[in-house]
Image 1: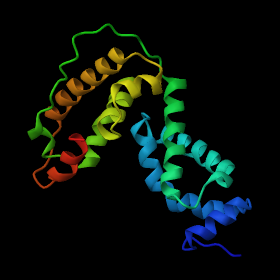
Image 2 (image 1 turned 90 degrees about the vertical axis):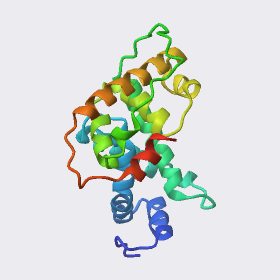
Image 3 (image 1 turned 30 degrees about the vertical axis):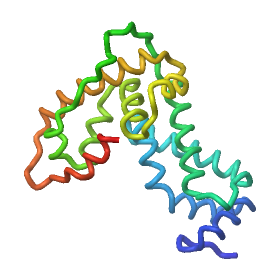
Image 4 (image 1 turned 135 degrees about the vertical axis):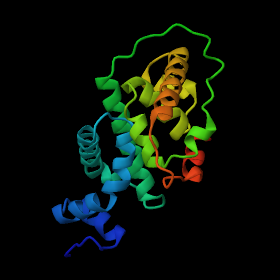
Length: 197
């Protein structure tokens, strides 16, 4: 079979199961943007995100025979990409155990700051956070994990997770106040949905 970028997803998956390089190429191109978005949340630079994505796609092609067609292929692939990104964080980030600084009361973010932001603006600011705080913030706010789950995923204690979330929120609040946004870049719904999860 001759594969193209517009080939049916099932055909591309079947081609990947047969180790067809063209099918792999077009599957990669089809899901590149969506999966890169996951990697970007857990890396400091686009080049690192692309490296993590390539590692994840290698795993996808290795494990594609395990995919059950009853579920969403995109969802199955996203799990592999997510876990590859978290493995990268574990390898490259030194986690410091933090004592409990009374972070049970989480710092609220000023909603009016976010009303002026596109989601892309927010992601740019999030990427400037220190790696550990960025990871905890992304897991908690964007992906909806609880502190206990984050602690298990990253092999840190719950109070460390809470401390990093509080630090991330403080830094984001300060950074966003300094962000010079033009009046024509307003999309409160996108950012509101992102931060109120």
